[in-house]
Image (cartoon, each protein chain N blue to C red):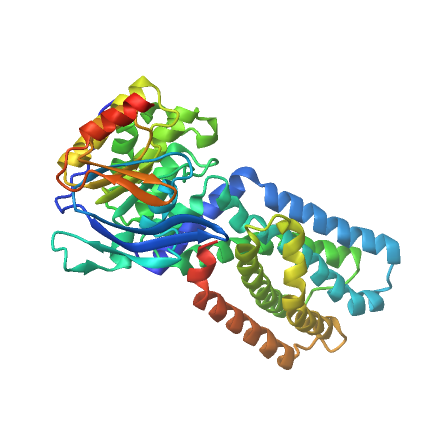
Length: 224
Length: 244
């Protein structure tokens, strides 16, 4: 079976499992909404402060949402050792990994689609005129987040304290990505509403490097 | 329940274990085990708990690498090695775990694996497998609602879906009722007749062992007894049954 077809088959399985239980999406969206709403009431920022500090808050919410979301990706396969069944199937190991990445990308994008308008309303930050470029930044940041997160989910799946271990492992690796994503979003929310090309290039580079690395390590990662 | 016999015409796979050893830290699960299993053999793999049976099956399924030694696969021509990638889609495993998704229905589980094995006529094949294992009426029910015996039957149906040429069974009778055991026996009988290589780890009282063409006993990770290819396993099985 070719890699693309296997990926799509497994992606459909991941979606079916999640949309049947809705455990991850509900918990993640509620948790991230709480962060955004609480910070708004705690600091009561002016529009200028919101444009300056809001991107950091937004990406912290995405980071926590992402780390909550990727955590069960491989842990879920341990219930009945289903990863063994996938490893025995005549499919490339990367198909297992890429299907989980695609599913996490979809779930996190849904969470972002809910969180960004709420952020815009609570922090009085207008998205008119920058929405397309913001989607680009969110897309590049989210690819990096879920790629790295899914890889670490595979690594930490057998650890006893994986819920704690995953964010601890993930944050140092994601710090450059978060800095780039926050900086790009700040420049986009600024008066000039510009897209910082240097940081965008960095985000693309980060995504390419981690996607390639995950592809190269997929055999090892699928062993769980 | 009807029996599910694979119809593939090609022969079973042979396996050559060459001085394999498997360590888990200080624990040695398999010690310098050398063994050749010919295509089409039905091997009863016996031994006490911790003898190394599951480890040997997992190494055969390529889910675990030996710490030392090598495993090679072949078909009719023993000199012609089959690459691991080619063996992958021709092996079936019924393990201690079910290898099924609890939140998917029986039908969805089988359809998922049928697609991953690139089988044709997926709906018809899935329906036939569910009919064979007696779960057609519960096709749309999620696996988590099944009893232990029903789950085990589905796990066996999943392992047989792609007509494997090497079937690895680790305590396949666990949880099966009388009807389920009869179905398992009939299914294994068909597989043996079809030339599929079967390695079944179980206790000596399992009636399906009457189908075995060879018996191997492991103890402490070592090969203790082997009736050999073409040998008669019945005296050894009777002896073990009497002990049990």
